[in-house]
Length: 235
Length: 105
Image 1 (cartoon, rainbow over the protein chains, first blue to last red):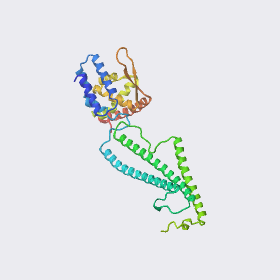
Image 2 (tube, each protein chain N blue to C red):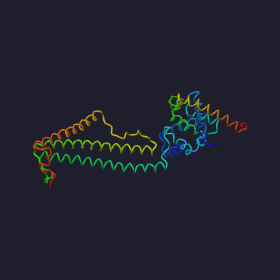
Image 3 (spheres, chains in turn purple, blue):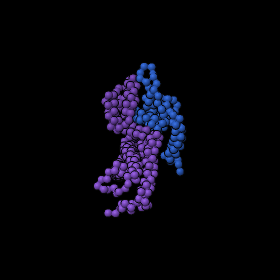
Image 4 (cartoon, each protein chain N blue to C red):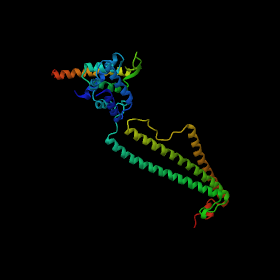
């Protein structure tokens, strides 16, 4: 085997085994040839003494960083598939939960808008004086904002969770290990503070306005059970 | 000889060469293949493994006329590992020698 033939075979074998830094390895062998040639050996002789390219390439396997093992074997892959199935089911469930949150947020927002804008679509909203209704509307809008924030966070969490798990799976299967990703989304302290403020204020507005709305409605009805006074739950 | 077994001992041999002075890959390959029956090409994977394990480091050194040579130098961890492993190996080898010669009871 000539030098070029040997180097080509070695390169092909190293590539086949997905060994990193192939060029670095090839340089060592190029230099080996160069030294030996300078000492007067023939290319064929040098190649023969080096050992078969397949054998040499095999010796470079599994020493990427010295820590990680080889590629995933069959058992590991089977395990990964099972894990992936459960993870997918969980992800679907989680996304479903997020849809529920989004639906709740939309429903509250719509109710709030109807109360404030005095729209009563096919008489779904029972009678109440507008002053009380307005405050109740603001309260419900607060709840909508709170649910909206929850929806947003859950969706971000879902996305990050999926990315993190995909990265983990890739790392187990392949040898080119990438840094693992955190499971929950990472935000700057400023974003976190803002998010917390929005959620907290939304909740405060909801609570305060709800209590106030009830008080106003009680006063207007002249009784604690204002819903009886206006026959709310009676058909 | 069992190659897997030989491989572990060869790592120790390479470390013992580098423990005395820094060498480039070809030097080690030439030296070891001269005294032990191994293919010339086997030293390079060992050097790479030692580097990956943090036992040796490399640096490039310009030589007069010719491409820069990659020198291997043993690290602190490499020195420590060599000391421990060689003591362990020598003790083991002594026992095996006795055993094989039938001296051990």
